[in-house]
Amino acid sequence: MTTERFSAPINGAGLGLHRSQMDRLAHLDVGSIDFLEIAPENWINVGGRLGKQLRAYTEKFPFVCHGLSLSLGGPAPLDLELLQAIKCFLRDHKIRYYSEHLSYSSDGGQLHELLPVPFTEDAVHHMAARIRQAQDILGERIAIENASYYHAPAQEMSECEFINAVLSEADCALLLDVNNLFVNSANHGYDAYQFLRGLQGDRTAYIHIAGHDAERESFYVDTHGAPVAQEVWNLLRAAYASFGVKPTLLEREHNIPPLGALLDELDQIMKTQAQAGAR
Image (cartoon, rainbow, N blue to C red):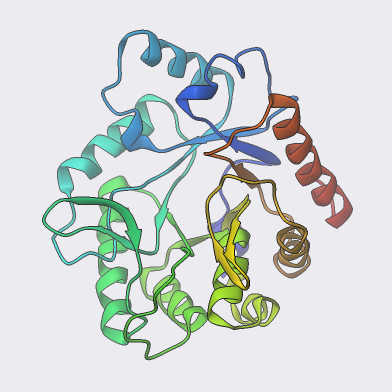
């Protein structure tokens, strides 16, 4: 197995693009941001002014897509109509990579939440089969993200063992979210660095980094609404040291600060990448 089989065809430091930022990022170029990420469900069949704005961005920047609604761990059959729409969207906008969550988000309808799956052998087989089906339809390998969770139902194996088993059986890539790793390790009482050492990190396509909130002492919530914490920067450095420098995207969806503050965090990613090797 070689890391090139799983790497995303992007480089450097990226930023999640949201409709509220469409105007204020328009003057930037690839010298400031190396790539952008969107949720395809938020843009499929969007036309008019917003559709033209998105087209201007996808013609200017490399893009990846991070899905929200495929519900890879869900009980209902995969939404084939959604998958075909995503396939067309990826093609039409020349999107370079697609990823989804290690979770489920529907049960007879969209629940608009990313809910945890049980860490069991049956769940490994169920999810891996659905990932393989999605990859067959899309015609490309996808990455799955280690999701944050606040309840761990029916654990027969550790989170790390579960992720590794899904990665192997589905032969898919990993989207490593180091903030989710910190939040889960703190909330569920495991060692994040030991997790990294046990993870099939050579399958990492790219990395997410974000901020979180402390709801109370020793309980954290993955909000994407705060600056990246030092503990998460430390985990990013550890991931680079273990798996090599990977493209890394800053997620900020709430309490979005002035553009200068976002660019400062992007610059911190670039500096961390430079210190770990070469961007």
